[in-house]
Image (spheres, rainbow, N blue to C red):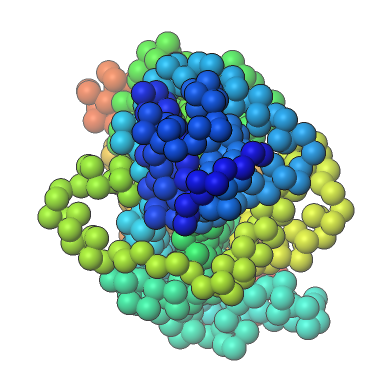
Length: 623
């Protein structure tokens, strides 16, 4: 580093004013460092610094410190960036990390010798007028979107809660609480963190659900957002454990993790944005990776979508039409799915316009899934997460001017306090460590012991999770049909609200609602009754004509009194052909595959008692 006697009151960066690449980045750095650094082309400043040869000005940028010291090339760049908030790490690496300085200088020399090409590349990757990215509007919109997703989730579970886990539901929460107490000591409060330790009564379940609705609305209207986000996370985590088999879905985990990161976003936006990008990367990349790692032949030979639209849990009406597409189109769509899930996630960490490409690809995939399958708030949440791939400048360009002015008034830029940044930064480090270990273990089968210990310690909080949807593609569609009878000869079918049953009924839409019993019926059909103990409890509640459980179904074929017997048959369903649909008005065709659960009845000593214990179904029912 040389010296000069012409140093000023603040640092000066001298660049080539006739070089488009140099001018482009000098303007960006000027916006980044604001008034902490002066900028001037050498064509104007060279005569004040005769000790610097003209060839040196033309070769690289020159940094003149206030004390007169001179630096050039990569070092000058890092010294300039050190005056911008959060960019000092590059200078620290240059000074401290062995080999980093040499590599940086070589990389700078390579770019300097190809400036016209890198200027064109800069315009393509960052845009013509690149400004330091801001995320106040992005953060504001994400928090409102998370509020709406929470709202849908709490309302959806709230209208089903008593039938699923109420005291007269399929899996009563009080019995679950008692079972945990019998098997665990004080550690149960950490292993199952939920507010229902205070009370597991039906009123408490309903109170949690509708308190979540109220808090979601407050968050949407930006009232006490941090407090709302904290309480929403606590309440939904409570429902996650209380819901037992009915709350084991990946979107519940994704909402918990996204909700927690939204809380961090509200405190330290910069860290929160990167954590949400990391979450989106893990979710999308693992969704593609698990398909290949599973070894499922339908994914390997690209035939998966030839089955998916017909065999997915709750198809929409458009799924029938998607299933009729030519095989070549379905093969191409499967290949495109892999590109979106395995390639585009890496664009998340690249310059802004490549991030935009990733966002549009993810949104296109989610819209396709949204149109052909009822996945409640899942696709909406994923699309909301894609907001973190944009910046305020991009959003302001596509939003109406009047809305822009309104949002600018509602999104003041504030810097987090040092203590808040430290706390959020520490949590971010923990999240990255645990999630990184999870990724490592998925591909290598084992994770470092320290990371596994930390993962085990924080696992009950569900703030870091693994993902991967549709790793195995089902190629057939078994459906369970439950029937009731008064005499064991004449049987009436129990229709469900959303899952396939009557072959002439068009597949319904139910987004963003998730009918959790209908979903579990899909999983139950893929296994046996022994693998799904809750199913026998469902039959018991039907024999009791439990109003809470009956409300989960479409209609009650026994409105006056419960049936004497219930049974479950297994059918194989497939889409009707175009000819069948046109001539007979049917969407499905089905054939009987066998008996899923034999006919059972309530024992006489318990048929009139809603309070009888029923942990062991054989004590309540008999074939």
